[in-house]
Image (cartoon, rainbow, N blue to C red; front, side, top):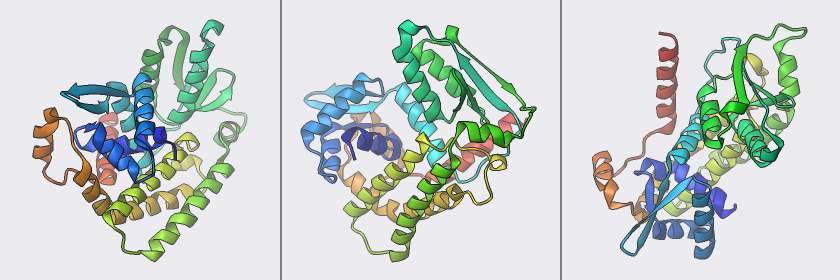
Length: 300
């Protein structure tokens, strides 16, 4: 695993739940578990900070890294997909986004394509992307971040033919390839669950980072389609339940080790104290609660 990818997983699964800010010395110690050299950690942190995902604060001779507003939004979006077990019902609408970004901003145009793909959109045609999920808040955030609001439009519609909705799925996503990825994930982690070997806290920490790292890869390929548009044999459902089961097995030890190393910024001391010695919440229960609140708000 590359240092940059490891750091994103570490901030998303641990640091953001502990006040969102951590001493660089703690990060270096945690990354040692993956044989990442201190200099490599510092270089990766510098680049992620330059990209706008992290911010750096100094206190005396110590440096602390925390998520920016942009980083918090991205981590929240990733968590909503990683810790989701069930899909909400689909209302039959497609969200369609089109853009006409000038050639002189082609670098931004390439970034927009990657952002849309990561967010869960599929490319239907040149500069036309679709999703069955309500991703309007994400679109607004992307438009603001890259200053492309004048060049972007989005709207909702129902597909009226000449074929079925499945035709759009086949055009925009390769479900067979995603199924194969899930099958490989299931094979590895079903084996780990069946063994149930006692693990040290350090090993639990490494296993949790590896688990989230591997599962997070599906965010780049699986758009999170509603059940109405998925085959009955969709392996993503089984993978989600296996991920949750293994996560709950290793999480207590993983967080004990993290807490033994973690030093946060003093500004967050009251926050940490308020949460208690074990600030970790069940991310699956939290995500289910968030989804239910979102669904209730939409249907008021």
